[in-house]
Structure formats: C-alpha cells, structure tokens
Amino acid sequence: MEAVKIVECPRDAWQGLPQIIPVEVKAAHLRLLCEAGFRHIDAVSFVSPKHVRQMADSEAVLDSFFSSLPDDAASPEIIGIVLNDQGVERALAARGVTTLGYPYSISAYFRRANANMTRSESRAMVEHVRKATQNAKRDMVVYISMAFGNPYEEPWGPEIVEETLVWLKEVGVTTVSLADTVGTATPAEVQSLYEAVKNCVPGVELGVHLHSRPEGAAEKVMAAYNAGCRRFDSALTGLGGCPFAGDELVGNIATETVLSTLSENGVEAGPSPTALEPAMAKMREIRTRYSQPDEAEDSRQDAKSGSKRDPKLQ
Image 1 (cartoon, one colour):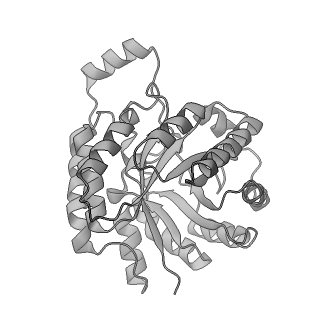
Image 2 (tube, one colour):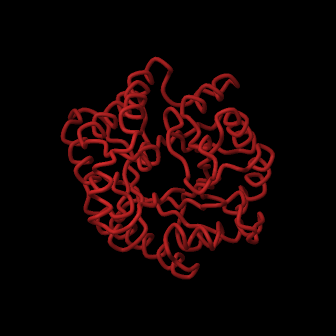
C-alpha cells in the first residue's frame, strides 16, 4: 500500500489570527509537531508584514525552532510560502527552509485579490521561483487555488486544471496541491476532479489542500483517498481557512480528522492519537489565547500601515 504523506499546516492555521503569537510559542509548537512525528510542515510565509502581520517573524521563529532542536533529531521538511521576489529572497536566506510554496490561482478574480497579479505575471513568478529553488537546491510546491471551482462565475473545468498541471510539469514543478480554496466542493466533485487529472502528469506528486465545514471533512478525505490521493494538507483542530469562503465554519480540514478517518478505513498515516495529544493541546491553547482581537494593537498597526490586513491563503 502506497504511504500517505501528511503535511501539517500551522502557518495556514495561524496567519488569520488577530493577536500576534509570540515567537517562542510558535517555535515551541513546531517542536511539538516534530516530537509527535510530523516530517512535513507548512510552517511560515514570507509575505508583506503589512498584509500578514502574523507571519512577519518567520525568520525569528525558524531560528528559535532550529536552535532548540536536539542534535540527533531529524530536521523536517519546512515549507515557506512566497508571493514575490522579496519573499523568495527571504525564504532562501531563512534558516531551515527546504521547500518554497507558491499559490497559483486559476481564478482571475482570486488571483488579483490575493496577489494582485495577472495570469502572465503569476506564471512568470512560478518560473522564477522554480529557477531560484533549482539553483539553491531547494524543493518547490505549487498550490492550485480554486482548483475545484470558484464562486465568481468564472470559467472552470477539469481541462483548465489539466492544462495548468501540464504547464507546471513543463517548467519543472514536481509537487502540486489542488486547493479547494472556498471549501464548496462536494466529495463527489473532489473525487471526480482528482480522477480526471491524476494521470495527466506522470511523476508529479499530486496532493490536496481541502477546506470544509467540520461535518463534511471525513467524506472529502475519503473521496480524495479513493481517487488515488496520497498527500494531504491539514491543520490540527481545523484552525484557519479562507476569508473568501463567506462561511466562518469553513476552514482547514483537521489533521486529527484526516488521521482518524484514514485509520477507520484501514489506512495508517501520521502520528498516533497519543503522540498527537501534546501538539493538539498546544494548538487548542493558541486557538483560545490568540483568537480574540487586540483592539489597541490593531489601532496602532492600522494607523502605522494605513491599510487593512488581507491574509494570503490557498
């Protein structure tokens, strides 16, 4: 049986929280993830602090994390999200980043709202990131945003996803995650799209980054698995998601749901429930402590930046 890869996504979980999580708290959580057994972590992003204040300390978090990692501990894959040239430079200079992640939207509206780019500009950035990672001997993952459709009445279909995948392979991208950005895809649609495109790019690792209401998560996980998916992005407690979803209950699929659902269907993947508990407890603590706005700090930051924050998500 082909092994299932779980990519734990604290970056996606944290970045929309209104209160800034201290560096040492983030680093401690990353250590707990490693101790639990996670080997692939979407940990940080290198985007404008004006837009995503929560991720402004990414370099400091990684320094703290790696400085306290035991000498005999295996270093995990660390994914850092980038959107532009400055982000690429920061990611390549940051300690321990092994993989650069780039969100490529096939929705023109979402691409403009999320990255303020045209299609050609975004494609040029993919090529730039790929060349930079090749030269630096790093890996790259591309997230196809709105892969399962969009709510903007824009053209969409499996053929658009397939064309994007073929182009990504042509420019040297070998890891891609299909993102259900607004969480509206049904299990049948998840399975149908994955089955439709999985064979068009042999040699490319094709995963999913799904969003869902909690009650629909398990069925989506099994729909992707049954279609052949063996790479799942998820976040402990299901924290985080997409502000464009228009439904506050839509968020990242909880890692514990992914693991328990697969286990119940005879597929073992990721840490055991016992190994998971310390990291789960830490994430629950973070969720409770930092989910309420710090109004005084928000006022100071808004006055300084003169702009609203707009988290950049898959």
